[in-house]
Image (cartoon, rainbow, N blue to C red):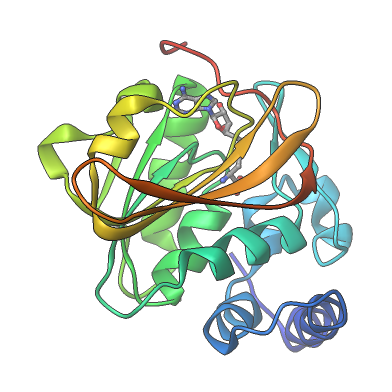
Length: 216
Ligand code: SAH
């Protein structure tokens, strides 16, 4: 598990690209600068890890494009110590970025193979401080009621609907970021105003693998 000056240089270049694409949150950019994305990919992709692209991670899933990770992380407005729920752990890269931003991250993955791989990988990355609090194998449509409420919730797969349990597990004032749609997804931000009301903001089209029910 090696990080090198060369990788660090490539990360700095990636941060420049993300700034050019409109990412402004310093906390997000610092986290991207810190997290060695090449360690989250199969070694055959390591040379491409700092391109702004999605790559396969097994089980027909992909690691999100850095721009998408940065865009969603920025919408969350993470503050140090925030309790964040992530649906779709995948490679763990987004999890690591949120941890580096100071969030206390709880993450759920429905694919056993990916869950096991990431459960093994994340503790080995000393660079992530704090570590994710809890990685769980399960169906993210249900959220994690035992650990609710959350300051924010991020869904990293394309969802046909907004799962109600996720809305219910959000604190008042909390933010839920979810790509909504089937073929193409609209990035959607819900801000919880009170017990019953949510404010909705939409920003841009993205393409994600689908949010599927149950576990596999
Ligand atoms: N955040 C990940 C993105 C992985 S792609 C990363 O940075 O690598 C989306 C992930 O969501 C996949 O791993 C997929 O298996 C998972 N997923 C899809 N539906 C899910 C569900 N209902 N609950 C939990 N995870 C789900």
